[in-house]
Picture 1 (cartoon, rainbow, N blue to C red):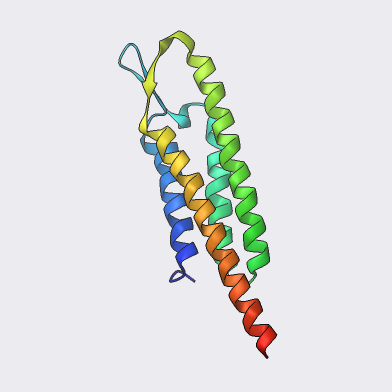
Picture 2: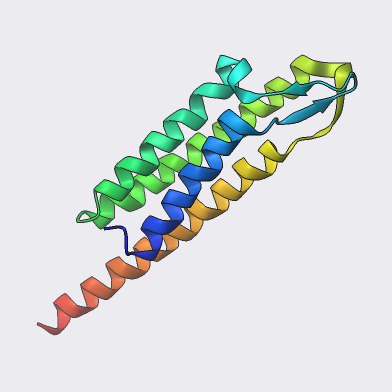
Amino acid sequence: MIQRVQSVYLLMSIFMTSLFVFVFPYANLVDGGKAFAHGDYLIFGAPLLSMLVSLITILLFKNRKLQINLCSVNQVMVLLSFGGLAYGFDKIGDQYEGLGFGVYAIALSFILITFAKKNIKKDKELVDSVDRIR
């Protein structure tokens, strides 16, 4: 359900991850060039899987326990993206000049997934407490 807060967080996470992958560079280079995530498959794969897992998590709104587990898997995917970034920074080596906005976008995506997971847990606790009252 889109009207739930965690669904909005996950949609924003998909948006931020897509900005990282397709729009913004993760590094600025000395010669004025830019390093993009879509230029290297090791940096490109984990964020795409993260977007897919976020979309699946939104669609499985009736199974909150599975949503929590998928959010944990999604967090691992984003951490793998950071590992890919470390590889990318090592690959460009001496050409590195500064961080691009893509690094901040993927970090914000991780934070949004964490907020979504927290809100899913709150929903689960609320439903469990109502079930205890019955």
